[in-house]
Amino acid sequence: MTVGTSGPRSVLVVGASAAGLSTVDTLRRRGYAGEITVLGAETHLPYDRPPLSKQVLSGVWEPDRTWLRPPAALAALGAEIILGDEAISLDAASRTVETAAGRELSADAVVVATGVRPRAMPGQAGLARVHVLRTLEDSASLRRDLVQASRFVVVGEGVLGAEIAATARGMGLDVTMVGPQPTPLTAQVGPLVGDLLTSLHFEHGVKLRLGTGVSGFTGEHGRVTGVRLDTGEVLPADVAVVAIGAAPVTGWLLGSGLDVDNGLVCDSRCRAAEGIYAAGDVARWHHEQLGGLVRLENRTNAIEQAMVVAGNIMGDDRPYTPVPYFWTDQYDVKVQVHGFPDGNAEVTVVEGDTAERRFVAQYRRDGRVTAVLGWNMPKQTRLRRQDVVDALLDPVSSEP
Image 1: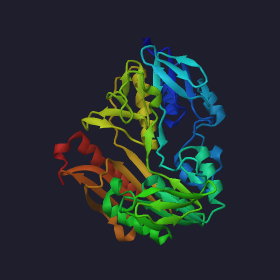
Image 2: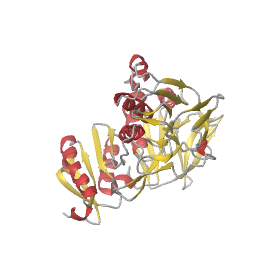
Image 3: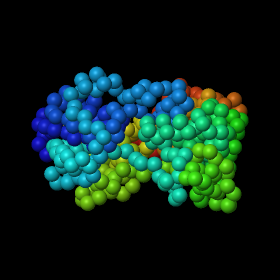
Image 4: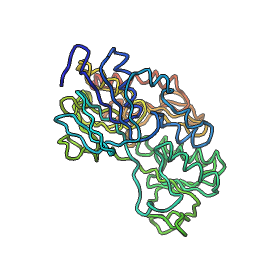
């Protein structure tokens, strides 16, 4: 890789995503004057994904309100942006990407920011009105069906499934949420907060069939009519959405010689090989303070990791050691989480009161603070984040 005082002469960002755009923006803010090319599989300008399950799905926002930069601001970055063309292979030695349209794009530095793709269920393909939610098109398609429907089943009780269920209830639909966990977000936030989320959805009229898996769908004339549970019971449905997680978009990297294992595996500098980096949902990197590989799927990580990647392209040689942050908005509740929550951790309410639905909870494993969670207490939660930072820097001294 040719590197001068201002970095390599050219950078190719694969993925017109939040992580991809943040990489470009940071490079330019740092004074990088070389060539930048952004390759995006979708036809849209880079846009924000969190509103897709809320404001866009409900119809409160028009799709163009999700743009991360208006066209004029995007043009001012001075990058060549190629949209609607997917990367299909990477030659790591020459740092050359081949695209579905036959392009061959090479650069001194390549940033992989291809994100994730929703997981599907058997029997889902080819059955109308069974959806996933990842893109603007997905959100628009689901909304079109929801405004004509009455019975809606959400398959999945994680963050995305819970947000979709809350939005659909706000649209007046009969909503059932189903999944194998005993409460919404159990694996992420544990039973205490999970029980509160259960009560929240129940109070707003969502039917909960949790602790039960889904084996497939029923349909007539090519359209879904129901969701079949593992018990054999069928839940009637005019529309269904599958929100059971996502897989990193790394298929195009097979044969590249790079280490692909639940994401593109990188060192602590988010570097997969000489001149090749990864940022966002697709990146699985070595977190020096945790001593292991980490992959995060959230908006905040996409931005922060891309900033570190851009700096390292410029020669910073800086490890990426974040305290993760994510949030979820459901009805009138905002849940914010800093750190690495664990459904099996010891959870203690340290501020507020769960009965009043305003509190901050602290998560501990082996006497060590691993996360803080706030329920409608944003300021106090932000202040408590320091507990997690201190534990990461000095885990031995983080006793209560």
